[in-house]
Length: 58
Image (cartoon, rainbow, N blue to C red; front, top):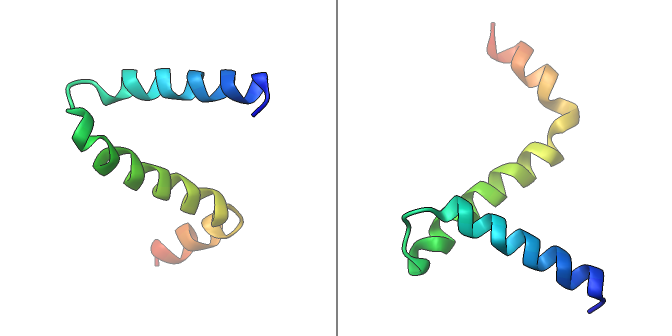
């Protein structure tokens, strides 16, 4: 891995530690994984979001 990749990984883990808060380390995956999945779905469905919202109002 390059130095910039290592720096990015360290930065992401430091943010994750802040977000984790009072959760135990063993519970961490149960919290982060669902939010990661939701964000990924949001990005993938970005182009169809306005149409979905419009359909939901009817």
